[in-house]
Structures are given as structure tokens and as C-alpha cells.
Image 1 (cartoon, rainbow, N blue to C red):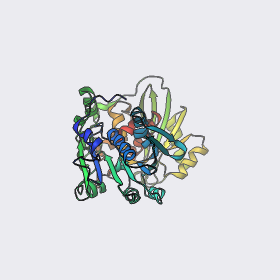
Image 2: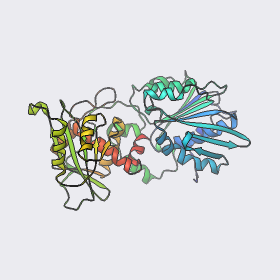
Image 3: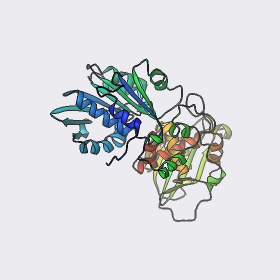
Image 4: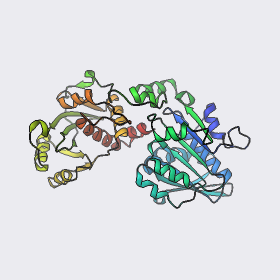
Length: 410
């Protein structure tokens, strides 16, 4: 990678730990702000340089939301740069480690995912000389606390980067608002702090977000979510189903007994998925509940004789998933990460990769009623088609190498 220009903030990230730096007395560094601002790349390079200049024979932590996202967002882009700088880097995928050698020194960097409360147990018992948290706002508090507690080597330091979330987020309140008290260097980034981005690329990223996500990922603000979740969605985005031979069909499902059930039939033409038709059933309005067998029949009727290559289903609907498998359907349990799913859905809708057709009246109705609640979560009302579309969007992002999901997390 040819890094021709670096900004003053990027240079400060690279050198803050160096003896003689005005910031070298800090115990931690925090970089937050806009997407594509260059904070992650330069922080990771700086972290490895600091580790190799300061220690030998020690262990370090590299922590992300998941190990897969850590490899995709951090390891794969950074290792070639480190090798160009003269570091011998050897990744052992089976052990989730990267061993780095330089000037007779060797250190080991362990990869961890911190997405849920059970993650903290994975890191217990390890002794670190330093930890880097990539996208720390997406990691749970207990995991981050446990990883920090592992840093008992003299001279150890903490490194944090993230895009903003809500103002009540634990990391914002406990670390960013208390950066000085925690002896942490806090640097806020915008895309202007990344000189490698052209004006055209910056405009493209700015056009990909609206509402709260624009404020967070473009302006870099820790703001509360409010109003409609998909505030950009209007009648101009609704289309008639194209008259074409679709290359593939799938169905997405949000299963409900007391709550409504929503199924969507999707057809792919090229790189675009069209939500062609839907099934929506509310037991409260109908006055009776349906069984798993009933819903399998409804799904089969929605398929209408088409070959369904995959059914993406709410992962908590265990009995319905089993009923579908017995009926011969290939079932994929959906990724139920709500915020990442919403961001991914918004990205795919705005880019035209997902299209809602006019026959999907209940989905269109929910788009206008689906709103944010307190605590950075959507309100649990008018969300059944919304959940099912979110499940499908995450599956599309996974099929395409995680681009949409990755962009959402960055």
C-alpha cells in the first residue's frame, strides 16, 4: 500500500507514544469519528510499532466485534503494510494469532471477538502488554473490562477506535467523557482527516447515509436515534415488479404466533433483489392462530411453484425451522444483529441492491411506521416485515463478502 500523504491527526496517532512526544505520558488513546477517516489503519500500524519498540516476548490483544470482522477490517489490510515497513508477520489462523518479528524481537498478537456477554470468559487468564479494541462501541462492556484487566505488564497501554453510537452508550460515558481523568489521548476524526480520500469518494460516502446514521458516520457525532428508522424511504423507491426471468428466488421470514408473521418472496435479477410478493398474517386480527404446518403451507403458496434456493428465518423460530427442513427447504438462520442489520438494509435500499415492489403493501406500511425508541433501539411495533427484510439484507451482505455489513460496522 502506498501511503503518500498523512494528516496531522494521523501523524499524531503514529507518534503519540514516542519518547519526547507531548502525549507520551498518556495511558490510552481513543480515536472516534467518521467512517473512512483513516483512524483504524494508522492506529493499528502505530500499535504494532509501539509493541515492537517497547517489548519482546510479550502477548498483546487485538479485539473486534468478531474475529471474522477483525480479520476483514484490520488484519488483512494492515499486514501487507507492516511487511512493507520491515516487520515479519506470520498469521496462524487456527490459533487466531499473529506473530511479529523485528530487529531480533518477537511478540504475539491474539485475536478475540467481544460481541456478547460470554466473550469475557474467552480472555480470562491471559496476560497482555497492551490491547487494541477495533470498533469498541460494538463490543460489550464486560468483555472490554476483562481485556483491560489483563494488561498487567509494566508499561501496558490501551488503544480504542470506533464510530459513534448513542450518547448513552457505556463507552462514550465511561471513556470519552472521562478521557482526561483516565489519562487517555482523545482524537476526533472526520473524513477531512484522511487525505487519501478524493472529493468524489467523500461525496459518495456522504450520500450513503441519512438521519442519525449520517450524523454518526459522516459527522462523527454521538447522537440519539429518533424519528423514522428508514427516513429516506418514500413512494419514489417503490417499483412495479420487472417483467424478467429472475435468476434465483428466496424467501425471508419473521415468524409469529401471537404476533404477526411476515414472509417476503425475493427474486434476483443481476445484482438486484426484488421483494416481489409477501404473506402477512396477524392472529389478533384474524381471531385465530396458525400452526407451523399452516405456515409451511402459506410459504409454499407464496413460492407459487418457483424453486426457492434459500429460506432466511428468524433464528429463534426453532420449531418452524424444523418444519421447513422437513418440508425440504434449505433454511438459513438469520443474523439478528439489529443495528448492523438496519444499517445494512439502509445501505442496500439506497444503493438499489434491494427493491420493494408495489405488491408488498404491508412492508410499505411498516416502512412509514417503524420508528426509533429510547436506548438506541427501534420500537417493537410495526416491525415484522422490517425484521424479515433486515434478515434478508444481512444474508445478501454475507453472500457478497460482507461489504454492506462491513461498511455498516466501519
